[in-house]
Amino acid sequence: MVNLFDAPPTELIEKAAVELKKSTQFSPPTWASFAKTGVHKERPPLIEGWWYIRVAAILRSVYKLGPIGTQKLRVKFGGKKSRGHMPEEFRKGSGSVMRKALQQLEKAGYVKQVEKGVHKGRIVTPAGKSFLDKVALEILKAKPKPAKAQKAAAEAIVEQAAE
Figure (tube, rainbow, N blue to C red):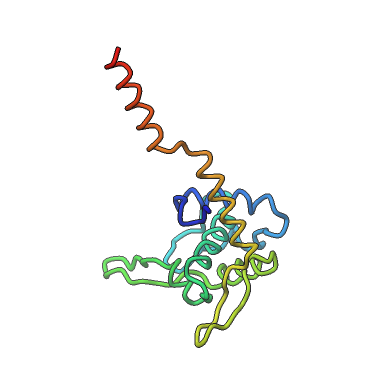
């Protein structure tokens, strides 16, 4: 059984973002083209469709770390704030981006709110797990396995040596 841990994270997030973009349930808010992703950033993202990439990254993080809330996601997506000649300091990412993305994922049925003991937050539903696992499977199917390629090359060398 293939799951999200078998696929490279960057490829998984990019492929999941493409799949999320096809869905009508996910759309960037009107302010998304003007907003920064945190106070540590100087400008808004330049990547077209950055909203879908962030939603896919949040879904992957919830899968791995759940139950997780907005505040911990803010820390995860935070970064260093440049303060001129003073030393850099850590700043959290945008809470509004996290909340809106989690709300869209919850509305689509990919995450849900739970309480596990003292931990409260969102976890991935079976629908969300199957979505990410299917994306991981597509990535692994498209990629040739290096072990097979090496084995085939070694067999070719042995055949040439036998002749």
